[in-house]
Length: 335
Image (cartoon, rainbow, N blue to C red; front, top):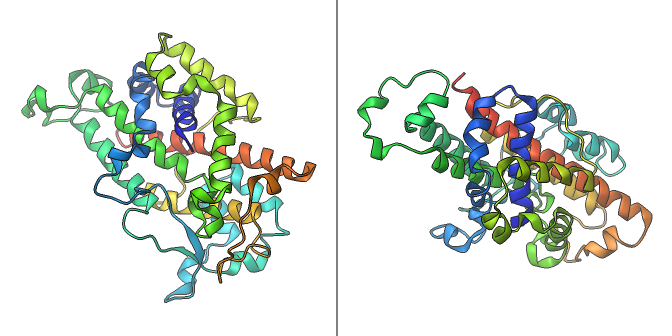
C-alpha cells in the first residue's frame, strides 16, 4: 500500500475498535492522536527509516514452492489455514471460491518464504508488538491512568524517561504498516511479476490510493484542522468505495502469537496472488519472465473487473481487521 492507503487503514481500524467497544481504553489512547501520530503508518516507507536495513525493510514475506528439508512443515492445508485465521477474514472465502486455480494439489504443496535480512515482515510485526507492550508498561502518568492494572515499579522510573501517549500512538501506527502490508498479495509472492517495478504491484497500489482519495495524503492530514471525530467519520465513509462490511466483533488471534499470525496471513495473501496471476500461466519455478500487466488482468473484460473488485474488498477489509486485531491483542495483555 502507499501512504494514503496506509493512513486510511490505520485510522479506520481505530473506528472499528471504537464501534466494537470491547477495549475502549485503547481508543482513548489513540483517538486524540489520530492526525499527528498517523505519520507512523507510513514512516516505514520513508527512505531514512530504512537506514541499516534493506530497501524493502521488512515489508515483504515472499513465498514460493519449497523443495528442501522438512517439507511437510511448510504444507498448510486449507482447513488448517481457515481454523487459524478464522471466518471473519474474508480472504478465506475468496480462496475457497477459486478452487479452479487453488485445487487440492495446490494445497498439498509446501510453500516457504526464504527472506534475506531486511525482508521478513512477521519479524518486524513481532518486534513492534513487543516494543509497544514495553512502551505501555513504561507509560507516563496519563498513560498509567488509562492502562488496565498497575505497574508496580513505575514510580522508580523518572518522569522524563517515561513514554507519552503520543509516542505510543506513533508506534502503534507503525505496527499498522506491517499488519496491513501482509494483505498486499504482491508482498507475499516471490515471482518477478510481483516486483514493484514490474507493473502489477505498483498499479494495484495506485488503484487503491486513487479510490481512497486525497483526504488522507500526508500534507492534508498533517495540516487538517478537523477534530478526531470528523477524521474517523471520513475514514468510515471510504467503506462504500470498496463495498466493505465489518462484523460487530473483532476476533482474537487464532495463532500462538503475532509472528505466526502474520506468517499465516502472508500465506493467504500468497494464495490471492496465485489467483490474480495463476501459476498455470505464470509458473512459480522455473520463474516466469512474462509480466502480468494490471490492465490485462483487470481491465479487459467484465471478469477482470469483477476479480479486481473482489481483491479490493478482501485485501482492504482484512487489512483494517488485521490492524485492529493486532492492536487489540496488545491491549488485552493488560486485561
